[in-house]
Every structure is written in C-alpha cells, then in structure tokens.
Amino acid sequence: MSDALNQAGSGDPRISEWISQLDSTDSELRQAARKSLTKLGKPAVPALAEALGDASEMRRWEAAKSLEAICDPAAVPALVEALTDDTSVKWVAGDALIALDEKAVPEILHALIKDPAEFRDGACFVLHHLASDNEDLRDILTPVIQAMKSLDSSMTVPIQALDALSKISAVDS
Image 1 (cartoon, one colour):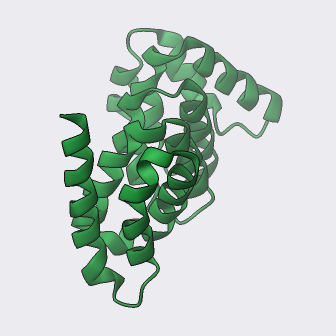
Image 2 (cartoon, helix red, strand yellow; image 1 turned 180 degrees about the vertical axis):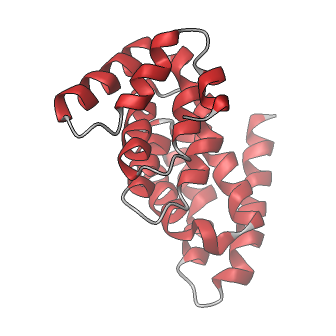
C-alpha cells in the first residue's frame, strides 16, 4: 500500500486496514470492509478515492461501490478519472456519479473539454442518466450527449461541453 494511502487513512487506522481488505479473495471479508468504510462515511473518502487508482481491479471496484454509497461530492474528481478505467469499474464509478446528481456535472464537462475521447463512454452513460432523471439538466446536457454520439465528436464535444458549463454557471449565479 502506498504512503499516500496510509496518510489518507491516518485519521483512523482502521481505514487502511479496510482498504487493504477490499481485494480480499474472501467475499465476506471484502463486503465487511466495504460496509465498514461506507458506515464511516466522509473520513474514508480520501483513501477510497486513492484506491480508485490501485492496480487491483477488485479494490478499484469496491472503492467505487463504497463511494457510491457514501455519496460525497469530494469524490467527484477521482470518480470522473475512474470513467477512463477499461474495466467494469468505469460503470460503478458512473453509478456513483449518477448518485451525486448535478454535483458531478461540472467536473465531467471539464473532463470532456480536455479529452473527450478518453471519457466518452463513461461520461455519456452518466450524463444520459442525469439528463433523463433531471428536467433542469435535460436541456443543458442533451446537446453534449448528442455530440458524443456524432461522427465528429472529437471536435463537437468540447464545444458543447463548454457551452453546457457556461449555462450551468449562469444558472448557479
């Protein structure tokens, strides 16, 4: 386990232990660790966010699932980064972002402006769900979703994402 992970869990020594158990071959131990981290809540978020970058797919999956249950906006940057994961972790991170609702949208749009191809599948999944579940976001996000599905998406997605971001900023101010 990395020093940063140990530091992230330094407020409660159990956090590092539970994080290390998230990729246990013992499913009961793994689920108990996830349940403990979820119950602890916000103090576990930094260590869980770091675990999203772990080499172990199981640990990344369990961390994303824990963050979905905790539903803390502080996890959004790490969850957006996890949308680039080429495993099922991407979809669990997407579910966690959907659970965060509109709090996740600006960070996803920023990621799409920087590198739309890297985030496209995961971002499309999240934004589609948020737009279908939230009438206020539907008009803002639909052009971005359509751009992600277009043939010239690499050119249109950053433009549409920037436009959506400015509309969200205007609503928030």
